[in-house]
Image (cartoon, rainbow, N blue to C red):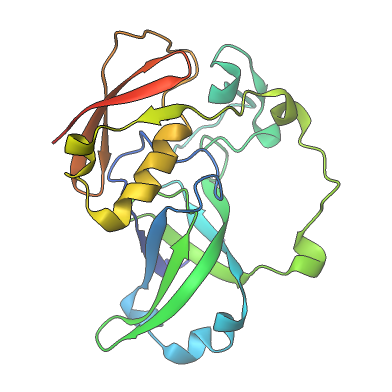
Length: 224
């Protein structure tokens, strides 16, 4: 098998897995940048890409690479108690640790040292995730308005109400605040954890956010 080349890496606010949105497009206010590897910093490679509103990212679950695999996995959205076939999920634990994300292309910046940088929103990747390929999203064939979502149609998709005290919010860079609130509203906890007294910690964009969840209410307790 030919070896796949890493063409780029993403710069996102998530140094760790906890808090990363479960799918792309769930938090559209979340901003990231795609920086090409040195061999691919050629502006000609993205000629015409600025005419598309969205792009596909093909990437590697770099923190979930395994030598073995299991035919079934436990999706977190089902509480971690029910098994589904690995090919009926988007679990990172698969025969080939490949991910697929659709993100919005906000703009293309031409940096004198780094070449073209793609500014995107709605990504679900950890900081530094290797990217194997980038393709334009084509509405005429990639969009399926009548598609059925299988078992995910019955999963809990609620959003939490976020109580973010001003003294805590002021510790977050202004450009990252909307994205952080969107991530918290999506409930980053594993679905099987419901202890209202438990304090969670999430690293985001250089700060550590501590919060609790009671029912439908998430309250930020501290930002370090």
